Length: 103
Image (tube, rainbow, N blue to C red; front, side, top):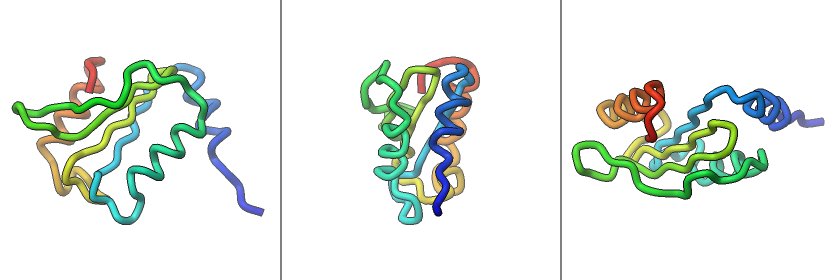
């Protein structure tokens, strides 16, 4: 029998803890489409639709804000270890998220 962590994540995120889930858009180990589908399976409503986010005037990825303070972001050009591939963009993403600003 396979177990799933979906209920665990749904429970924790439903308590309002801020959550940032990100994926490199070139990740061939865990493609962002799969991560996006997993997040949708949690059943949270969309607060801010899929939109680009920028660093120094360039598109750095795309982001969606869900209910319960859940942010999903992609990192353009990032692989499985996105900060290794795109450190400047990942630092900007985390800095914005930690300071409570939109990614």
